[in-house]
Image 1 (cartoon, one colour):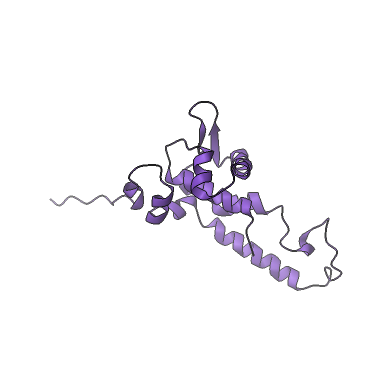
Image 2 (cartoon, helix red, strand yellow; image 1 turned 90 degrees about the vertical axis):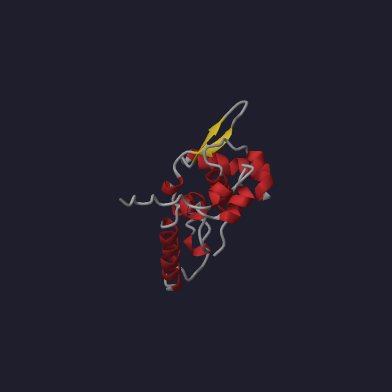
Length: 162
């Protein structure tokens, strides 16, 4: 199984926005940092905006931000937006299937179950899981001069002894 470039870029955009939460980021910053074509990235951002993952702001100071909290963004939902219209194999395509084995092939049902299991696992992963405490990611993607505050989860409040 291989994810499309669009899905990969969607994940990068969301991680970039998540690391820089509270800031308006520009597509050019994401493109430069994530080694992506601005044109291709614009298409991905448009789709992420249509599905409510990011909000875009036009004009001077414009850019994009997460539209929802990172813990509410399921990576399974993101992957479905970009992958679900693409058949995993020829036999899953209503229009392009020329395989003569489709009606009797048992492999097809095993593949369908495997793909569903993949999406189930991705449904359990949130954007928050990908960014929280990820020091390496914060160092690579943060626009802040000091990415250390993004690196560690907030400390648990200490009980007062008395």
